[in-house]
Image 1 (tube, rainbow, N blue to C red):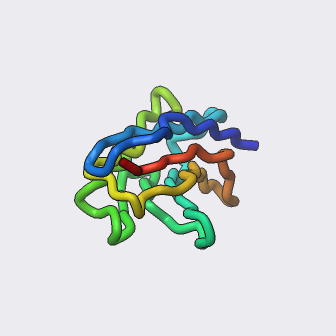
Image 2: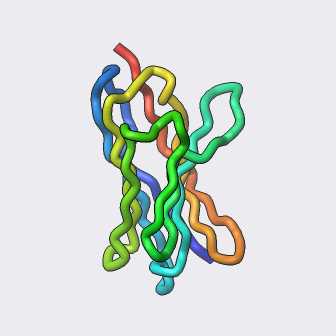
Length: 114
């Protein structure tokens, strides 16, 4: 069982930045593919960014150039740095770990509003 705890969400003005963190349990964190997903009201959950065990990353087109995913295997933590935030980035952001199956955190709310 993998437990994931997100933090770093909050209210930010358009154009602002936030860094989300996700702390994971487990001794084989370095082998997980880690991802950030988001779900806006009335919409399906969508992939924001993903980083594999070898450090390869991929991003949703909507966040390319504005978001950076990174991982610190020594801290069992994955981060999502989000810059130039837009109102349409408002959503609950979920951390995902994939190792044979998917594990999810409870989410952290990001609200982009003036």
